[in-house]
Structure formats: C-alpha cells, structure tokens
Amino acid sequence: MSIEYPSFRKKITGTERNEPNPALKFLKKSAGIMAAVGIMTLNPNQGFLGKNSSIENGPEFYIEHALKNNPLLRRETQKKIDFLVEAFSKDALDLMAAADLQAREARKNHNFHPSVNGFEKLGIDPKYLLKIFSEEEGCYPKGTINGNVANISYVNEVRYMQAQYGTDGRFLAAGVASYAKDDITFFQIPVRSFPKGKEPTNALRAQSVVRFFGHELGHMCQGTFSNFLSPEERIDFLCDVTSAFPNSGLVGRERFEDYVGQIKNKDQKKEYYHVISEYWAILCETYLNEPEKFFSITSPEEQALVKRWLLRDKGKDFDPVAARDKRHLLTERMVADQNVRTKQREAKKIKMAAPKKQSPAKKQSFSRKRLLK
Image 1 (cartoon, rainbow, N blue to C red):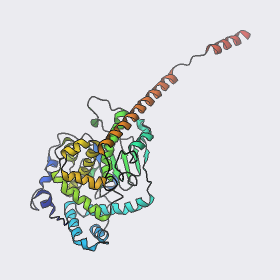
Image 2: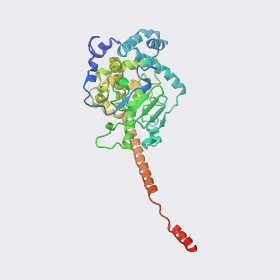
Image 3: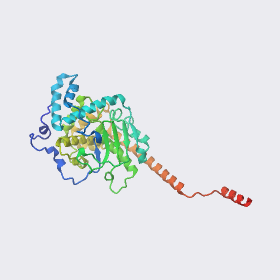
Image 4: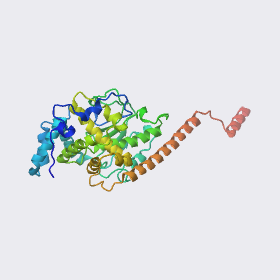
C-alpha cells in the first residue's frame, strides 16, 4: 500500500509551512506543575545532535541500505526520508544510522541475557530482578530484552535531566537508556515520584525501579536504539510514531503533560524529536504498567503502533495484564524479602552494640584463679 508523507507541518498539523505548529502548543504552557520524575531518553554523552552522533550523508546511508534489496521502493522510501528530515532535520537520520551500525556489532558480541548490577545498594537481591526483568518468566514481551539490553544497573547518585531536553538543572532523572552500550541505568528516585505522606523507603524505590523499567524498555525498542530493526524498519518506526502523535489519547493526561509537556528547546526540531521519543516511551510504559488504562484511552492507531513495534512477531502472544500481575507478585516477594533482611541487619547491629556479658562458667573460673593467688 502506498503511503504519502507530505510536508511535515501540513501532515502533523494541517497548516501551511510558515505557520506556527499547533501540535507544540502544549509545550508552551507555563510550567505550573513540575515533573514528578524525569526519565532521560539518551545517554548524556550520546545526545541528539551530540558531537559523536553524526554520520556524514545520513539520508544517503539509509537510502543505500534500505533499498539495496528492493530498488522498486526507492521512491517511497525517499518520501519517508524527506518527511523525517523536514520534521527532525538530517541529524535524526544520522542518529538512526549510527544506531544501526552499533546494532550490527551488538548482535555479534552481545550477552543474550542482561546482567543486573548495583541494586544491592537498595537492599535488593539481584535474583528477584533477574526474574522480573525477564522474557522467560513472561514479565515482558519476547524480543524486547534478550539481545537488546546488555546491562541493567543502579547508581546511587542524583542525576539531572540533560541540556538537550531544555530542562537542565530543573528536573531530576530517574533513569537513562543508552544505545551506545545497550544499557539501562537507574539513579536515585526523586522524592516527588513517591506517594504523598510516605517516606521514600528502599521498598518504594524498588517498586519505582520496576515501574520505570517499562519506560526505559520502550526507548530500547525504538528506532534509534533497537538491535533488531533493519534500516528501512527504523525509518518506518519514526514515521509511524510521528504520524500517530497528533491524535494521541495520552496528550492532556497528567503523566504526559507533567513530563513531556515540560520539554523545551530553542531548536523546534530538536524539541519535537524529544517529544516524539518520550511520547513513544510513555506509550510503552502505559501499555506495560497499566494495560487496562492503555486500551481505554489510546487510539486504534496507537494500539497498532505498540503491536507492530514493541511486540513485533516474537511478542504477539504477550498478555500485558498477566505480565503486570506477575511482576507485582514478584515485586511483593522481593520487598518482603528486603524487609526481612533489613530487620536482620538491624537486629545484628543492636546485638553487636550491646555490652557483652560474661558467662557464669567464665566468672567462676576467674574467681578460682584469684583464690589460688
């Protein structure tokens, strides 16, 4: 089926080229509500338009590789590329080209299953997270983690959103996905992300990590990150997500507005790229964490988007409700074990701090020695 990709502004907003873009109006609201938590798309050193992200002749690279086996589609793909270059600039194509080259190496050298590191700092036994962050346990769709995510780590430090989001120094970041290393890294969870009136205990932090993982996994499956997409699929992915955004059921919702609605950048194309990227991640996050809500508020186009690009062929039998319930059960067990271990550590500290009492036998022996003297 032929797909038309006309002018970016006309396609997205129905306006002429030189008119303001209404699709970005939600970004221009006064930031009355600060984001509860920021979740970064890119590794700070691999940012959009970063120094090392550009590959010369990005669009040409994609034409060459996307069409080498099917030259009859050259004209159709050229339309898509023109659409993306006008929407996001040539640099978005360069970024996909860099990701494609990285993915080829990753497929050669990648650990098939991810390692889990650093969560002991939260008092979490990694064995639980290995089960939770698992395709085999049915917790996430097949083809999203294995061979796509190499490491899942926790770093016990505060991290702020990076400057490419235009929110530098204002929002704390909860996690970051990096295509360069195929890593997902979590940081200290911002206090505002916890329920009001509750202390940010390690148990709540552990639950937050599991909740935010769905967002970061969405990034790892997008066109500029995934290890499994071909060049032409990366182009189709970004076109599909961009086309679905104007009619999204997420826009106007609290989670979307409090996070994506705060992204601002002097360069409108950079801004729109990050908006689309985070829109996709929140779409995946909602599908994985709140499937009932996802199917009630999203458009048919968005549901097809998740089916095509998150589930793909391997995950077509995935049940998001059953998976969510299983993750909750495993998380409850993890937190219960965490509480037991915390109590054991506290009891051990109290025992070690208490003054040692001599046994009656030792006292009697000591008395006899004094008498003999």
